[in-house]
Length: 402
Ligand SMILES: Cc1cc2nc3c(=O)[nH]c(=O)nc-3n(C[C@H](O)[C@H](O)[C@H](O)COP(=O)(O)O)c2cc1C
Ligand SMILES: [Fe+2]
Ligand SMILES: [Fe+2]
Image (tube, rainbow, N blue to C red):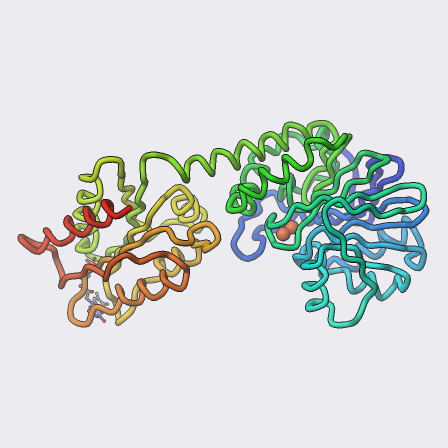
């Protein structure tokens, strides 16, 4: 077992050292993502004539990070810090590094520099780069690869030409902490790799495919991502797997069968009966298929997965104390307007006297950029007798309009 701690640095190739941070105990990332294997915040030191660091660390780990920087160089000798992405899990420690490294020029895309100036609050030297630009480090060169929207608008990759090392930050990474840090030494982490793609990168699948095409012509020896193991033996497999998952996602979104998620909650079963009626209306339209889901106990991950595979959404809720219910708010939290924008939606529900839930759901879905195609369908208490027909008709009309 390799004894790797947050005091150790690790050689990647002779000129590149990993100076990242292990966070094995992290269980939730960005509030929404479960990280049962913990994570790492990878940063790298390039020992060129002009000493350079690629990415930093999350702010709470700044002391360990700065101690590692001091192990590999004197911070006053540092010439450049390249930021491939500025989310605070990578950029949080930057301002503390800048305080110790007065010579440093921060190298990043225009968006990244704009975001950094909002985060750091004090002026810093900067160099804006774009796709194809080359930075001379004296005896080595960095070439920048435009790879935007993975998963922020600011992202890029950095290629160390002489050593054939590609730094990709969130791309081809995983929330997976293992002290050995090298892909061939950490055991199988496919589950963490796929989960990372599905949770962070999948909505940006189109951009992932473009980025994969961009790096194809490069002569790559290894890929150094921003989270999880360094890809020194299997970078091709990881890139191929990412491209495959992106393609699968895009083709399921364009699949000929239109899936309609009918997500509902129901305290006494009346809204459930309405959900079944709406679903039967949807299923009566050729080429559409309803997926009924009682979301009372659904996890955020299950809601996200269901929203990801659906082409349209139907939400049902009773009115309880002039409101809808917590699971429906959880469903809102699982919506991603970048992924779901302009998908169609409809709302239904059971109520007793005032019936606010359906309007509340409609308002929320609209601000989350769903296209709500008709007014809510609702009725008092149970859809008995003739009261069922409008729900079947609404499901049919909705599915016909998809
Ligand atoms: C605790 C509680 C609070 C309720 N508050 C309202 C309300 O504010 N407005 C309303 O129209 N109906 C209200 N209702 C009535 C329900 O919306 C109605 O019983 C509905 O049919 C329940 O549907 P379900 O069986 O799908 O849960 C309330 C019911 C309960 C149990
Ligand atoms: Fe990120
Ligand atoms: Fe990240």
